[in-house]
Length: 127
Image: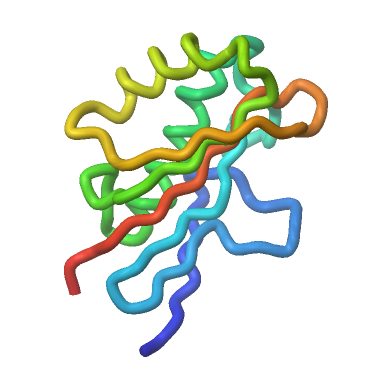
């Protein structure tokens, strides 16, 4: 089975040694996306809701580059910097992702200054 690197100019270019996405067979892993504008690399938004919307736009752009969409996602992993942001993130997340929701894990961690949320995705595609 071939491993295919997924790249798009519609999501930020990684500054670390990683791919935006990798597909192997029907499995597509989208690397953790940050709330960065694809064209400038600048942080979009100061609230967790604004940043969540941008992160999910970036996740969706990588999915689309692999001919996939949020309907193909089986799990999203959310990394928040502050537990107090959970309710606000959930509201923005629910509006952007829509039902039926994929499975999800949410963890709290430290991100670089100004970044409040990161999200990665695991999708299963039809061959």
